[in-house]
Length: 353
Image (tube, rainbow, N blue to C red; front, side, top):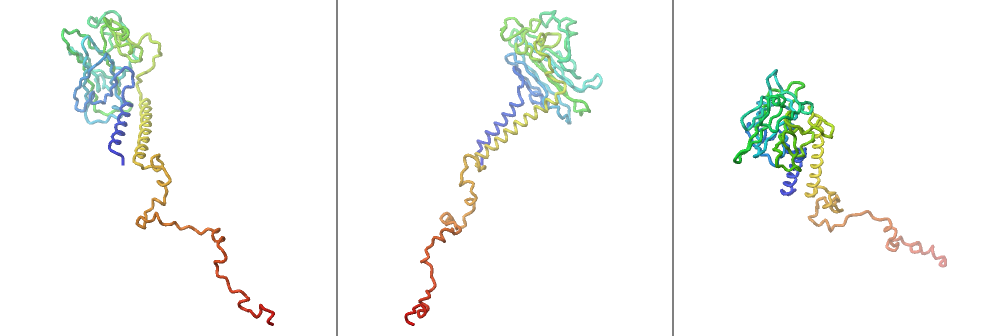
């Protein structure tokens, strides 16, 4: 039987493998699944998340909407705490939320630190197929004119940089509502949002941060990475890039999900198979294992019960008589019939006649 310590190690290894398969598929980003309880709690609790080292975060649905059959509406509430002298961009990369006429059946809504919140955002959008003009007229976000506001991407929001006289964190809130109504034929739910901290370019290390317009800087890793970190109309991080724009966030990634799921399943099955072999080896359940292989381990006669009370090992095994032994026996040892002379002496001696 496998020891408890070995069983615990196997379980921990499998859990770690599953975790590695489902987290952080984008370099330089923190990626979280929308079904994570710290983002979509079953009891609609709101959680706060810290942003460290100006690292961007991707929040997206993985398998949450694969089968949308629920009994009640779902509301997700979470915030990002922004450090002093930092702001944050929130850009919806991809969304497929239902609407009934002009009313949103499902929606996303952002709320800034100053209490301003956007309208309810719904419908279908793919950021890589939507174009907004880039306007370079202001040096910061505090003096935005009406023209800039009109061209501003409504599927994004930002929290301005605040210079407090004392340390104070800003909280940028996101509200996501999904109706309990079942999906109709041809409908699907999907969502992906990128949150990117930004700073004023003054007194920043140019080796770590790069400008994206209006004297705003983000980490250099986020430029030309096929992920839109800047809201259209405010700044741009995906222009003048050498790559050919491809759909990093496709509208319908069912095929991608199936492929990833199949590959992950194959890897997990292989790992489980190896673990089963290892367990059988440790518990000596497999006769061909290197720890128990040998002529005495697999031989059938030794596995039979001894009916002589343990004395069977001294008992000779009966064997068939060999032919050469019978032939080589001496003839003198056999009882021969009496000779003719001893039986009829008068016939054998002619001199007497």
